[in-house]
Length: 254
Image (cartoon, rainbow, N blue to C red):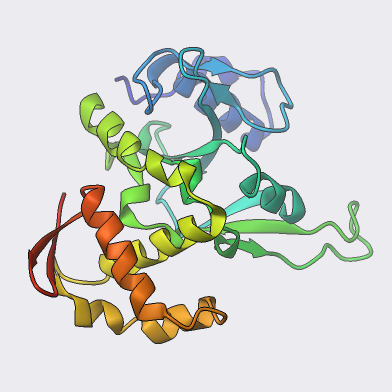
């Protein structure tokens, strides 16, 4: 995988954002592949497609690309808040590619967050544009990547190192079961995964119970938080994220 942008494509563009858009989209189209089925190349949608930037002609997965210079940050700027919330709650929302690039215009990091990891609470509403702005009253949003469990960050390139394709597709496909869950059930699974991310490789049920008060704030109508935690741990065990060691003790699986 060549990590360098083809800079000759952008010599006629004076706008830096437009230049980067052309270079990064060209790089994905020519050097990437579908993380779900490993097919290549990805196909670009027509310009101004409202839903996504790329799709796989083999498995029909759709992807939107976000590019940024330098380091991958926890907060990513996105478009209209209402549109993003509507997409998250729909069946045809795309997964997101996040690409960071260097001063020399080569790829530092390239990862995908599969669509099943997006929840409304990770979309941050920005203040409306002022009355004097060209789009007065328009409300944008940011994506908070801190609310994504580590298993939902699938790197194709990490710190300029290309990740083996088999590893990428295995990690991507491991979480596809989340798509069959309801929004509420999926939220529970993702929240418990995030709790486990904060613990050591070997952990106890009591350590997960420490997060019960926090989960109660998110699910105030649920009066059986600890029962729900145990249910989710059993699900994650069955799906190969953790393993049962002994009564009340677990180990994370890579």
